[in-house]
Image (cartoon, rainbow, N blue to C red; front, side, top):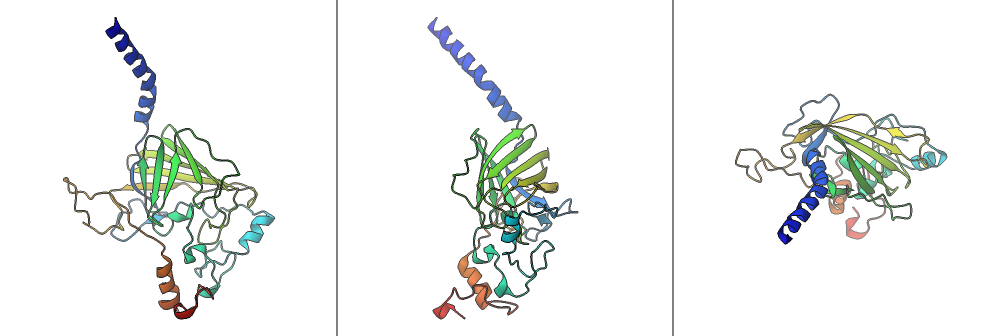
Amino acid sequence: MRRFLSAFIVVVAAAAFAPALFAQSNQPDISGVWRILAPGQTVARAQQVGAGAAAPTLGANRPSMTAWGQAKWAETRPSGQRPPMAYVFLPDQKDWNDPIFVCDPAGYPRTGAGNTLLRFVQLQDEVVQFFERDHFWRDMWTDGRKLPGSNAKPRWYGYSVARWEGDTLVVESSGFDDRTWINRAGAIHSNEMRLVERFKVINRDRMEFQATMTDPKAYTAPWIGPMQIMERMPTSDGVAIGIWGAKADGTPYPDIREDMCVYSDEHLFWINDDPLGLGNNFGDALTGPDKK
């Protein structure tokens, strides 16, 4: 009798747990190295770093800004590449105030820029999204927790929760530090920014990605990004070929490069190695022997 009772308990427990296991087994596995394809690219694999890659973007269909948003945007001084959405064009480096030029974190979604690739790691309670730029990651929690309230300390990359809706991973994020820019053109946001991202699995090697941003403090309407295509890679094209050897089948081990913003390197570029001779991006912040 005791043996029968024990077996019955095991069967009941397994039956209760089976739906969760079944749901998890039916979820697509997106673990691996991915790139967002640049417009017009279909197969972008190449030896150059980030060849054919694009950033996760909200696109050029920016809604009109509130008075607060206009005032904050008017303070931006993007680099001299004439981005069409910039507030002003300033060719001289000493006039630029792009936060990444002093190695502030790029934040999200901008950390995906610069021909960077990313890597997903799918775990039981979260999906982790790693980026080559800043060698940073996002925790996208799938354990049922809710986003923190407005009293939460802002983060450079915000707080994220996620859920699977069939073949689509839906990610909701909030709590962003408003010092970051959305893109190199100086698109701004406030601490009220919320992002909803949808990663729709098409097949093993392709996904569709789209992001929508709402920020009532900075914009009068949602900013809806374009549909972008993502491609799975065997490994990052920014990793030295053969550095890890190869797997038994001859394919490379997956990896992404380390692309860090290091203040001393930025100093060397902007002060000492300034290739265009356009000025001191760090202004009067450097003194003594560091000031050249």
